[in-house]
Length: 629
Image (cartoon, rainbow, N blue to C red):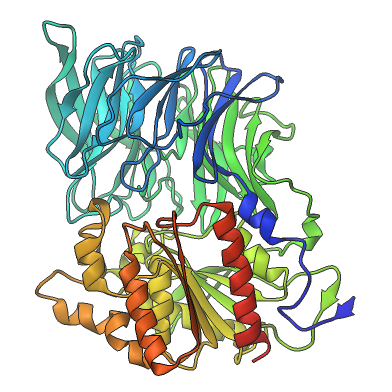
């Protein structure tokens, strides 16, 4: 072991590896039960890939088509029906793609944006979420695109997750209205269908069967035999799974553990469970304080059991079950980058099959930081949660306590899990300790914990990051003189607000597309988040004083610690002028800072060249202002 200063270790996690990985978005089985289809993002290009049996994967889509649902923050990229895939293009159209051969064919015009397509059981119709930018609803088109799409149902601010009843005569979907976000309160609606003189389906009646403005309902799924409708609801304080008997109109709760079985609906197409083809069981994901496991619930016995074949993974997403009982998901762990994996069946004892890898996986596990969940008392005694990454190397060691990077996640209604986190590994393998904070307001710890940030954004997130840093300092795991606060979007807001409220506590701050002006966020952001700050901060104009008090822009003179800011020129969520006005204050007062504006990037960096520049620049900044300071 060589003795070398923390933060200067040579790392096997190089910039090119972090920047060049694929982003795996979704996975689904085709009707044959052996063909797996997934969507992945290669830079700015969204691609569909399919694999049948043990055959090599084959690409289904080619440029200029980029597969990407773009309603709100995206998601709901595709669905598989028969021998075809229906997918959303970044141009707003829906496309039909054969699993065998041939080019993609547009079935809707280029108007607005589309997502979450769902094909009727008879294969004739596609219902999908559509937005024109102002109005969201469900639209309908024939699967061959021979007719113009028709509006199916509108009237709510938002809609997601439409699904067909196996008989084709009913639809279930989720709706909600401003000022709610989908984790605040949603409604599960059940619609009956009829057909007009031309044969087009239309909605005859609609009823709300679960949820309201105070209860969040997620992911309706009909059982294949048509008897039951499953969904997740947080009415008990945790997202639990329920069954709705369509004949008896009766709700049955089937999970009872203090863990999450649903997700915050940031994007379309999210899934946390799936039916088996015989309707006798549900295969579901359970999030227990950041660790995700897979379980099976048997309807006949009302019993659940853990599925052991995926034990190597602590983070799983987008569960899918084939007609033959195979289980697929996107899976990772702190030392394993995301993969597309499957089990032959939920009872399989053999290791999961790996269909695709997001990265080369050439780094030995011992070279990566063994992330671990941690908790600590906040400034007011309440328990706070996070993921801790100790500095790790098989070749280097250092004396004393390491510098600490405190990472504040975006959202802020989100969660960092025990998944592969390339940013944390990038820094931990260079000799930094990393604390990824699930501050109050994060998901994964029940509704009460999630709602603690109501009216407290800019307060509790700041305090929880600071108390987490102090906890590690007190344990001898971090150097109090070398603390860094880092985050993007809402996490970037926490960075700036921390530098304003606690000057000198952190040695430096790193912010990406950081919210600096809460007024600007409320006025200029996109429709999905247009009323988000109502619950996080307060309602305008009555609470304007709170907005001003908690906007870093109006208190930028208190920022005296070095800070580096990064911004996408095409960001429509946090406009570039927010970063630029902070930079103007820093420049005028001579505060050490850097500002980098990336052309062609939006809210979240995607291009490999952007990511390479970002990571290289951050390391250089931290060496100068933290490690060698």
